Image (cartoon, rainbow over all chains, first blue to last red; front, side, top):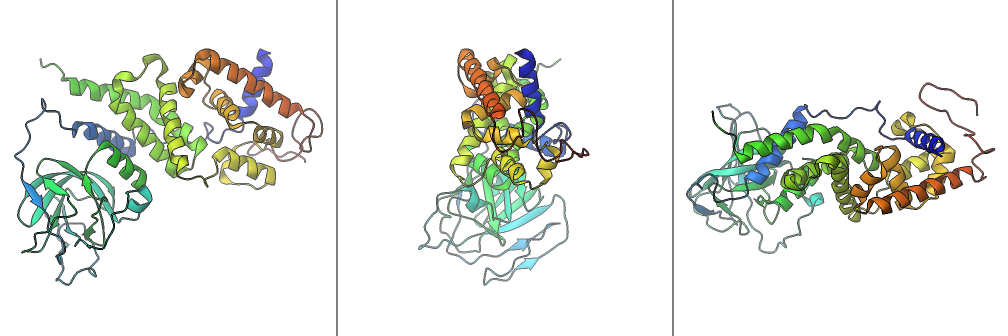
Length: 211
Length: 192
């Protein structure tokens, strides 16, 4: 019986779709290390009050229903210039650290927020995770800790034009908090596609963009 | 001399576990879904591993991880019923006689493929855990979240059913043994 077992097992093993001959990504790869780092930062970003003292909270409600200005700074240029009435300056010089600027989308009162699904997220051109650093009346600066897609800048600035003061679908960017941001055509996706990082939201981003 | 913080210890432990499971998890996932989904599955499992570091059984790390991967895959499939499972696709292609990059590395054992097709998915599942992941019954129990006894019985019955299907005379074989067409592996040529 044991010999028959061994033969059957061997016969099944011969149709293995992933035999030894097919290689896998080693745990030492850049991919693997990136994944590890992202994961370990994920849990650390969950507020636990006995850890580092939180930075002072500044709430910025980003104005929407506003024309916005896109500035691309640094090695990475967004490229798209067809979405707004305002002038768009594209500057491809590269100061250090590398930066990227995106605009916050005007809200459309007629738009219905879709339930976020990875298939909806996936077509985004840009997706990253980061912690909000500086906040002003007209911009939010995000220190990126993980790029899912579309760039490698260290800092991304989210801007609105002066004089606008409508909320971005209720996303309150708070200094010290971590967010997942996606964008297309130089404009940040709103309506559930951008927001505070949570394990479920991160899993969705990971599924949409492949980690 | 400074002592390591709890967080540093967790990080070290996590990294050590990832070293052990990263490649086996890829194999598990890529046996059962397409490459792109497979890397999503692996990422999801590692995320769970990090968050539930304290729950992981030291003597059954891989089976535990496979169990998580299995649930992630099941959740993915609920949203994508059209996706053929890799084995089903392989079986289909082997029977049709078409070659793909994957079937080039897998032997064209038409008898076995046809027999597997006739089994229930639950039977196939234990057989593949046994033969591809090389797990024993008590480890399969952890993957499937059942008692070792239940896993043992299920595996025993699945083997028996597979043998019956393989030995049963049908159109694919011309006798009790072997394969009537195809080649036995890359580089081999066998007369049909």
